[in-house]
Length: 324
Ligand code: SF4
Figure 1: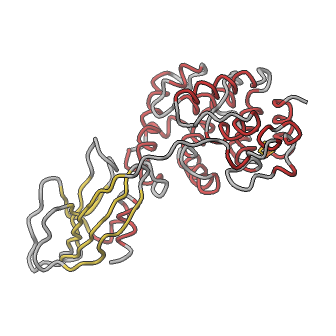
Figure 2 (figure 1 turned 45 degrees about the horizontal axis):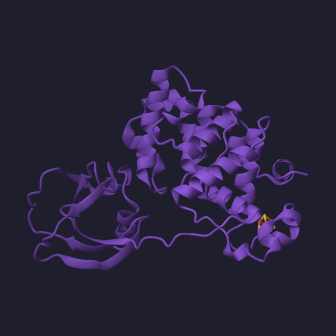
Figure 3 (figure 1 turned 180 degrees about the vertical axis):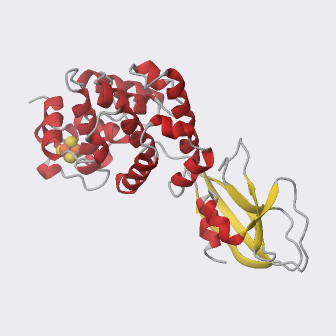
């Protein structure tokens, strides 16, 4: 049996039964792919159901206010994905329907090569192989490839290999099989080699190199960034502002961000560590309860504290709010 047949057979027998796999509606498939871009299936599942319930069609999503989309997204992080999702929904409506070619799908905001191949193959049967961390790992081990992943050489090599292996008559089963096989069988640690159907011809297994593949490049050291927040409390109200473009958390709300802590403010938490993908945030959080209503910097608004829940917030703000 060939590599590809083994993967598609394995998928038919052991593939995960996920709600978005019971449909070929490109909108539902696209939504699942965007949600799962940086999120585990277990966590993304509930979000996908919530989005499908609130926005059953792409027209519903396109017509929604951005705030509502961000609020529904809250907790998933990487808010640029939610904003792109919303922009792309409007693009699709303007196109008159979901694009059915790879180039058309790839032209949607927030859709890269991987997501375009996943949507194209699953919803439209297009012969485009997906290449992500799971695929790199399975191919690197099975074929004994030591090219460091994360390099452009690896991208080219693994993409060409996956594309050669893709059976044109069943691209969806092969792609989803590769994703699931990498996620549940050929896992990063403790892969299930002893029960693996590919084991008889797996190079890494034969050569005792399973733990050494795939080869990874040393990650760049995350950059540190310090943030000082003052939570103002006056007559049951607090001051927040909405973050602008060109930085983290665009469009989300946060308390007063300042370099100068007012006299009389009390420390709530100092040096609170919060990890983002490319940087470590260290936040100082102060509570200030002034005797009179203070003036606010430009862009800040007073809101009732009881209404804070209605504002889409970064996870960091949620965590430190819990410490008040
Ligand atoms: S034998 Fe082990 S390393 Fe090789 S493909 Fe199977 S699970 Fe992966």
